[in-house]
Image (tube, rainbow, N blue to C red; front, top):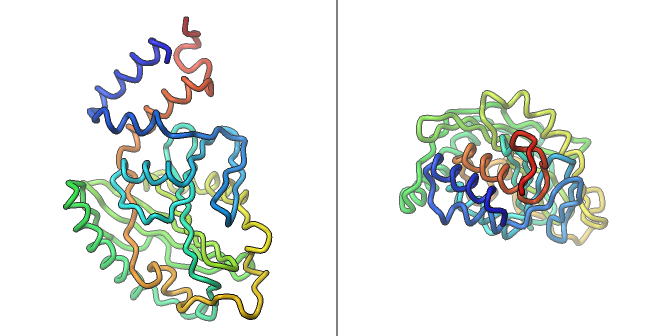
Length: 272
């Protein structure tokens, strides 16, 4: 590793006040630079545009742990712009085909209460690990279902360590289950982030034979519908935090420079 970049990276670490172990996570991630195709298990794939980075399943779990988010073991991918100003996480639940019979009867109040209970349960684990807790404040956007694309979307507003956090959730229904896509961003940046998020998500597709429209009689069918899907099926899910956003932003910029992503990152000077 170039000595100049080592010194820059160390300065970042000291300035951010984080442990050496957290820096090691970034260095060990097998980043894929866009444009590329990110593989999401044997279920789906997504086109990663230029200016974005992708991490696979095991690296996604390591990133989530480092950001103080308990992992589910179902993580398949992580995408973010090279600045890491926001990120999105992909998780797949092999629930079977989820019927959309409840599309016109979603109870937002009941679902919000389930989110609160799920986050309260998650907070016990956060406290055990010495992490900051999360409080659910309410809906940023109530759940809505797109019957044409079979996508379910909603946004939760939360608070952690005195700061606001927004999770924009998308559920992509497939033949064998559902892909959970969570966008984590600064609340003040949500409206400006959404066009970029939508553009990236437009590159997602289930693999042949895995699409919702390819359902056949005899396929496994989930025991719950859209309402339970919002709150995580059998167990209410907890909201993810974007902790260390600026730390990760600095570290990834350093890493990208090392990888040759941004040749003129520091004053346009080349390292010797």
